[in-house]
Image (cartoon, rainbow, N blue to C red; front, side, top):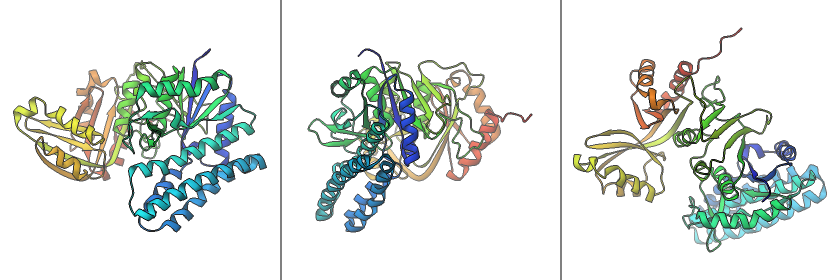
Length: 454
């Protein structure tokens, strides 16, 4: 390939209606001098609607399930409408094909009155396939040389439906085979994120919200110059702007900071998106599709030297706490590794929030601990669970040197909250969900004071 590519990924809120699609087309057009690959999520709300129709069918409500999807099909047609009869006819044909596939799939579910992760992946994939097809049509109407590519021909995974793991060597090879000829002929491949296929061509998905992960997989396969994640905020923020009105954009963070923030709940980052590009040092830029002129946040191997220890505050709600008690000898040797292996086997994320000589406490990324997970954790000790917890976390490379000082600052804000080091660059507290909003606001005001008014 003559020049490195730029992979642009557009999320569902950047593709919510006709105006949003036009903004995306303008962004692509303004960057056409670069070699581009475009990755898209489903239009906002579509994946939830598809999965809901699947669940309703299993409850015997197939007619209602099918009717519930017509609104979303119409949304796609409405976007194509302003571009003329040809665009509308092409999108209608694509929707008709999707509808036929969905009807066949839901009829199978209705007949058996059972669901499967395999069938859910198949129906969930329709959202990204429709939005990628629609954006291809829109870009072509703008006079841009776009080509739809089915991402299932690029990303090869295992058969763990719902959260499939890419087989990297085969994914790299297939991505290059499918995309390089188009890029070299100056065309713009447009692909759906989130979706993939197993070696025997059965549809899989990489997990909810994983289109960012798809984008960095494509970047790594193609040796991209940069991955751009276009969303509806100005980048990584110092806190969730829904909780803190004064939240600021963080100009630059390291890969490690980004991965830690994603793990601890920062909504703009997907937990798996960093790994594919980290070793290759391919930067990621988080940008706002509504205000493309803003600089956003750069994620790269280095980090700007901050005057403060913390780059951002993250939080998560609706989590389960799991306390595991064992013997001091086992806790000192092999205990945590055995627990990590069990969580990995169940493909459930976790983080440690406390440790003692006789056990440890974990937060599970589910509102309630799954019974099968609890059963298997019983192999390593006595298990106690409780539901509906929340975590608040402070993340920054500067904590490697200043974690002790920050603990004192945080203790002064709320002496009742205990802070744990879950890594060298984060402090985490376990709190009642009702305490999250006021605590995050108090911490933000302390660590990121508002600019005084002139």
